[in-house]
Image (tube, rainbow, N blue to C red; front, side, top):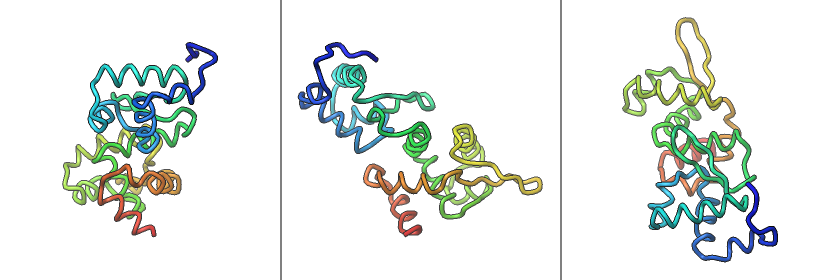
Length: 179
């Protein structure tokens, strides 16, 4: 998007405390969705919308639609693959599927469902989106399909880098496992 005033810089845009707070939150929690940001910062919808619009207009932040949610990122900080992985990690069940696959290398739908305590159709729904986004790969083994994380190294790097943004003991356990 074009800038409103060509003389304004990123620093000028971030002079307002509210914008700076939003920017710092997104920087620490890339892939956060609008509602979570609003809730965590305890800000009104209109206020957040206004400041996000300005931050995006000045190319400080950018947003992407991911499975019907507006996901927020610092502009030009992450590539599309990293954004897709982080966006997926923001969904608890999806995150737990990825974490399970990180520890097991490959797994069947039923094994994932049993481990997570969810139904196989729930796992199928999440897995299909992960496969669609290239985050998980399908491996045929006879009549069975196994699933594996496509880029374990990148996924682990993102988990380590943004560990504190995932308030989830399962993330800590996987990081300890990979230790």
